[in-house]
Length: 232
Image (cartoon, rainbow, N blue to C red; front, top):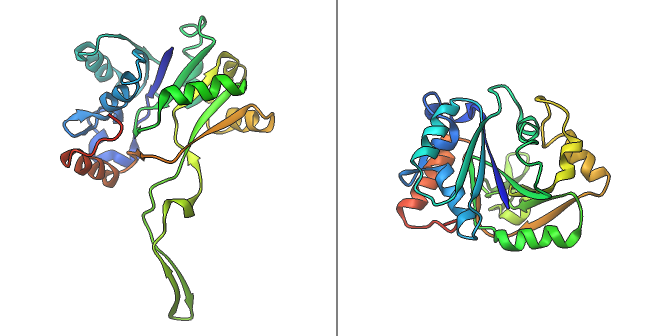
């Protein structure tokens, strides 16, 4: 099964790193996060990748040329200004023979069981599956009575609710929901699928972490230094 990794964004919230490299090539534990993401699929036997590039895409091509994995890696330039749904739409011809394929972002790691995710998708028979995760809890909650703290609680992940963790599985009908380069996958396409009852959530209670900011990168680096890499 094909795996599409969206690698084209500028990563402006991580500008300390992305001025000179695309976000998927920012390193954690001495390897680009893109390598870690691909490894999370490889360990379940999925080795056929499409890397949809944009900003500094030639560096992604160089990375693919040097990668030691024994699989197929196709790098496709999808435009610097193209948005997430538009990048996927630009791969329509390459995915023409695929009735089912996977999509994820190039900036987050997760220990989701890919085989179980695919099985869940095939069993429910809908067009789309999104992996639902609990975001990392960063802040405690306080309730104030004037200046007096009336309630203090260290927030847990379960207080935050479910969010889009990426790690999608789509049937080919997803292309009917994408219009052009300006299509934002997370807006009209997924909202329309939701309204039509065609989007299902695979609930994942394990590890998930995005790399939106320098703080996120440093956190992932620290985990790698400690040998805590549940996604590998």
